[in-house]
Image (cartoon, rainbow, N blue to C red):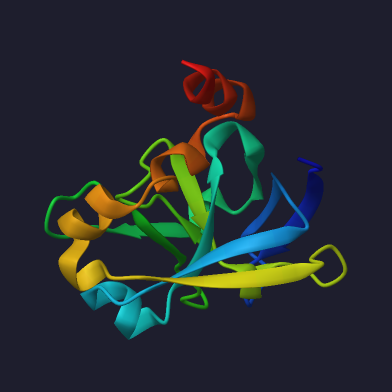
Length: 143
């Protein structure tokens, strides 16, 4: 898979990041309680494909329920440009609408039923692998 370097950040510019991902984004639209309230659409990347460039001192984290997901947002403007998803605590969920223009070729949106999170995770064939580095995911697929 070809990877490009996307850059992005929050509204006020305090938080900036870069992320390596395909130019063709696979975005999840989840209907769990918090994603519905925030309209949280995101694509998942491995931790080693994400670099926070600035703003760690501007990030506030909110957790609830299992406390696995880490909902980070800018304390100045309130925008969540990325977070640690419950489905992939070894990666990041990145908001495509917080990317700078020019590197996204296409966006495919997949609905994820977060209201029935456990069932949806059990049924989904590839979501867990989306936060694995490519070599790890490819190795798993050959075993």
